[in-house]
Image (cartoon, rainbow, N blue to C red; front, top):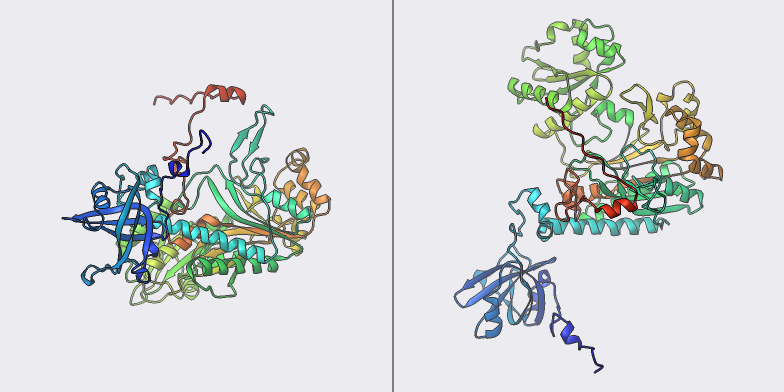
Length: 609
């Protein structure tokens, strides 16, 4: 042997043992066979000579048993085992006695009689049970994320996520897409959220932006002639967090050339159907139904409606154009809307419940109030607002809403967004509470024809989704006369009231793109500074193109039945944007700041009241 070179036995922690089976794969077909299993000690029970250990790996649990008369050395070592010790064991698979069979486990009919045990590592006691329900708060679980990831829910969720990756890749490859990576260090562009900025050491005083999406890059790839691109892309947005939002997230991102809306929707439907089939074994009904944005807002008060809820809104704006009821008339006069949510056979809604709903919409949704009417058994209207309504208005409301004895009607009047948000939320909450939901497990939906522009809080036009959405061709004439009426080629995929992703056809003509920038308020110099490279690219010969971005985290959350994105991300951030396991974000030393020519400004002093 060459001097200084040790044999492999000195370097091998497993010794002569090599795993032959996953713990969860031991079944009656292996009875009588010698196997080697490895994993973590899930539990240990000493029955006065016999020692039973539940051994766990990612595939499940198997019971291993230590008998002193069979293997005295292994039995002695088993006496020292504790939770989460890492071990490897060799033994023979045996059938359990009938009274000890565990029907809750796939491996519950068998056990492994151990002949040889090797302890690969000891472990500190886990901070909570490695069980289906850990009985620990999320903050504790995230601080001890390594233990949390050993729990069955986390293991299942990340398996679903893995299957989703593979399904998307296979589907898009079959459709002729090329997988191409785009830069993480990029130029800041307006996409609706704050950018994460990265200072450049080589170009002092200048910054990269982490991409909010690969939007511009994938358009450039279409202009460069790649025809069909996809990427499972990491994206970054510095925004406030919630259950379905993270600072960094993953998109199934794709773009295709020489297409219209129909070709893109065909790919979206195929990818979604395949994803559900490959991950949870469900065949979604095809074709997906479609709603225009206008119809979705009119009927459901949301552009991502859960159409399984069997309640719909009614628009009463025209009924109150000449009303003497000031609360509704003032909203209409300002260009707002009056909407109604009828609940028929609403006997379960007591006055106390109605008062609770009013308190909820005021506190949580910013409503000024919640007007309501109850139609009594004799047909009279019980309501604080009934005395303000004329007979003609009552008749119109009843005709539109289908009001009858037992109905409860809720009303909201304000600008376009607020009544839809208030009644749209009540629609889903009350629909589920009252059982007004059909029995479909999954309800896929396309929402199409969104507006290109919307009014911001300052009254100025801004883009509804992003500034690169192509308008519907026949609406181009509205640029100079009525731009807020322009329809876009935008489309969303919605599932069970959750937006899975968004996309559109893009502006492939620079004159259309420049006009949109002008309406958004960009001066010519600023337009060239921020988007000159993109406008020049369009002038280089851009084909008609369009694409889409699925929120992979949201899809995984829905498929795994999880309550939060954090449940389907291996190492998520908290709602304060922190990683409790790694301790991020953290300070950096002065030398790094000097190299980047950065200084940390002192925190502003709080004023004494």
